[in-house]
Structure formats: structure tokens, C-alpha cells
Image (cartoon, rainbow over all chains, first blue to last red):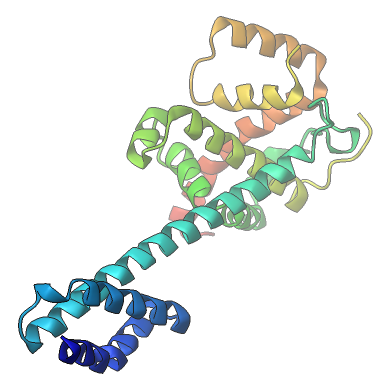
Length: 193
Length: 63
């Protein structure tokens, strides 16, 4: 069987090239190839012939790569989603005192003449910027609700969210847009109450 | 007594679902006493109007 091990070693450069290309990461590529070769050597009695060996090796490697990409996709996507949501929640929490009442300097003040704003192109550009600043999923839920007029139940089931999660997202979007418009158009919130 | 933070959640929820009696009562009481939350409620209500206006502006060629 040492000749099979030699054959496997002979495929290593090709496997490396393949793995590095797929993963865009040399170290991860090397690890994937190493794991694939070890798995192949452990199951060496299950192949016949050189062509079969190559196909089999690359099948093992492909599965390793897919697992890694899935894992990476999950962790990148979820952690960046959560980070953006957490940032928004932190900005909202900062408006309140420890007892969850408005801090004097961040208590909402009435917007001056909001309907006049709706007549101005510049206002829509500010609103557009505020929308774009929302995390992608938050913006999506808000737009499904307010632009498409879908009911919350429909949005939740389409996006596979629980209804309480949907409400949390909508609250986050509204609070964020309110704060953004206050800062970006209606002027900062003055202290006196 | 409802905190302002919890009141903002009820105010947002009221735009998406009917509040139950208890929620309506505690929120109404809170709003009577809290000017900041009254402004918050008005503004998130306006967001609905603003969103509809924005969609028209965007679909009408952004003029």
C-alpha cells in the first residue's frame, strides 16, 4: 500500500491549488488537504485503481472545503448581523438612564414642521441615507412592513422569524430611523424639557 | 409603572398589532405623564407617512 500513499502524496500539489483557490486562504487550504489525505489514508482499502483514487481524494477534499465554507459563512454572517444589531441597540440604550427613563439630554423633542420636510428633495436624500445605514435585515423587515404594507405575521413567516423577533426588529428600525432623522434633519435634541 | 424604554416597545408594537387592554391602559397612563414618549410616539407614527412619501418620491423619479 505504500505505492498508494505515494500516489496520494503525488496529488498533493494539485489538491493544494484547488483548496487554496476555493478557500482563498493558504493556511486553511493546507489544513483541508492534510485532513483529506489523512481521511484517505485511513480508508485506503476502499479504492481501486489510480483514476478512482484521484476522484475519491478530490471528493473527500471537496466535502472538507464545503464544510469549512459553510462554517465560515455561518459565523461571518451571523456575527456581523449580530454586531450591527448590537451597535444599534447600544445607541438606543444610551438614550436611557439606568432606570430606563429618558436621560434629560436625549429625551425626544417634537420635530419642527415635519410636513414641510416632506416637500423637500433634500429631506428624502437624508431619509434614504438613514435607511441605508440600517443593518440589511432590519431594513428589509422595515421596508416589507412600511413600503409593501405586509402584515407582521406574513413578514415573520416569509423570513422564518418568530413574531416577537419581528417586533424587536421593527422597533429597532423605527428607533434608529427616528434618531437618524433627528440628528440628520430636525436638529439635535435640546436639553430643556 | 411602565418604563420609557418599555413604552417605546409598546408604541412600536401598536403600529403592527392591536394592544391588549392592559397594554393600552399602562401605555395611555405613561403617555399622560411623559412628554418625551409622546414625542417618540408622534415621530414613529410619522415614519409610516414618511415611508409612503419616500416610496412615491423614489418611484416618481426622485425629483
